[in-house]
Length: 249
Image (cartoon, one colour):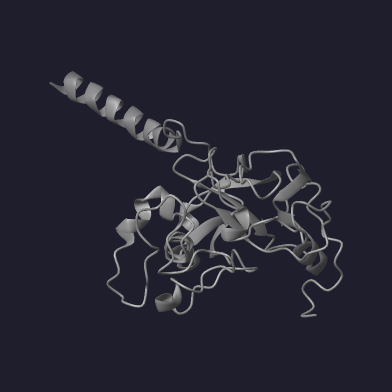
């Protein structure tokens, strides 16, 4: 009996030693947090400008030669083709000296005409960041990351008030009451708090203001694992030429 119990105890100890390793193994198809990823633009016949803008550092439209003349702004792209069950982000650097925080970000774009964009009215542009996940505290993030809110889509996404999503989400989204090409019904209104978000599952309504805001605005209230320092190896070109970043100017 003692030998049997002793063997059970040994097996139990091995299981406890293996458990952390099993937890750390990524799920099927998952990329680990921190792996590079490419933002996946809408795969339909729409203009990308209908959607929240997310071009790391770039302050020009894709049809113009890229130049890092903007200040760093957090970007979230969801879903990401490479980050199954995760999301792809490009983020401002929260730690380091003042110049590092003001001039660098973990995310980068390359020349137009290269990448995975598929919007008919906008030339392709390849922008990349890193895979991450939502979190409740920094304890649930890997070493080198902090759990924090992000501030994506600063350029053209309006989330307040939520009753105005149907008409005031992005500058060129299709407003409530207008029927998109190929759709059998008009874009929904969000004036009532009881509006049915299930209508946005219809692909032809994807460019409706209400549907864009209902997809992206909830991200603003969540927290994500953010890289603490600038990753010079992965994002060596993510340095802005602007001189007013971080100065309030």
